[in-house]
Image (cartoon, rainbow, N blue to C red; front, top):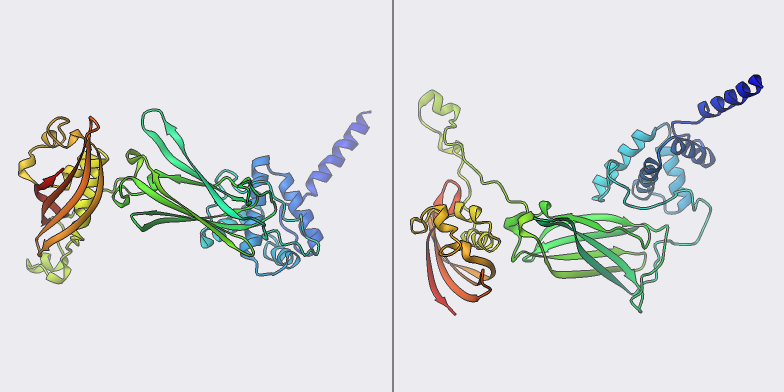
Amino acid sequence: MKYFKFLILSILLVLVSCKKDRVDGSSLKSFQSSINDMASQLTTIQQIKFNEALYIIKQYGTKGTGDVQKMTELAQMLEGKNVKEILAMADGIAQREGIEWASNAPPSLGEMNIFANTGPTEIDFNDISASALSINIKPTNVDSTKGAQAIMVVPRLINDKGEEVQFSNAALETVMEVYSGGVKLSTSKNLMVNNNFKGFYLSFKKLSFDKIVDNMIDVKVSVKTTKKTFQLTKTGVSLNPAALAVPEPVVSDSLSVSPSEIQTGIQDPSLTTVKPLGDPKESVSRFIRNVGAKNLKAAYEMSNNPSWGSYDAFANPSSGFGAVKSIQLKGTNTVSQSQDQATVNASYIVTDNNGKSIEIDASYTLRASADGWKISGYRINSSK
């Protein structure tokens, strides 16, 4: 009996030791066998990520036109590589192609098997019969005190009845572009494998506060099938301004000197670094958006206006800008500009903490400083 148990254990050890930990690309059969061996030594989550990596390399790292050609090329590419090396290769391809995927991130493409269609076939899995694209946007990662920290953007291909189209084994290039005020802020790319596509996770921390107009963005999504690219744009998507990234103020080092200064005591003008002032209209727009989002500290640091006094006076909830609940910026116009001074007119609708709204036309005087334009004066021209 003991001998029998020992024999079984010996057989199991031999079987385990025979499992391959590197790709054998000598033939498609050997390739599949070695991949199965390598996957069987991974956890369930690791297996899913491993399959995702293989899928990305096959779709974007090979040049073959048919599935068999792609698989043959893939086997040759991966010859002798282990799991770690394959994941690293997929990371590189995803980064090169702009695909929102990483080997150390949670599974995102779903269950897939690159060996599902190794036989000759005339089926094009990317030829999806759909009529339109729908987008569902919902807040996520919601903090009980700070609010939503991100949104999920989930696109779906639908038929003429508005029903989701069922499909699988596809590799539809799906792109999300984010705009605000007509300016593109970011682009993300992923693969839609089936109708259970998880969508895009957009963290507000990736959006800079000074680039957002009226606390809203426009989200454009496109999904490319064999015969048609479906596009849809959702406009006026509200954000949580408190969760947006606030750029650090640029501080110039006034104590730094050039080598010529050390030797001669005279600074070489060609070596002097002067911070570009930028557009004074943008400085006024950023100031107004900061006030509207109650980012009063950032707004105050953009000014050098003696009449506004201290920060406490500036942010006073009764007599200062702290009384502002929100602002809808309508437009700005540069009236005059010289090397060190500018005047900008701005029109906007202000809503106070009591819900009362008023339309204001105001003039801002700005002066140049080492940190860019600073608001030095403010006058209300009209209000209604």
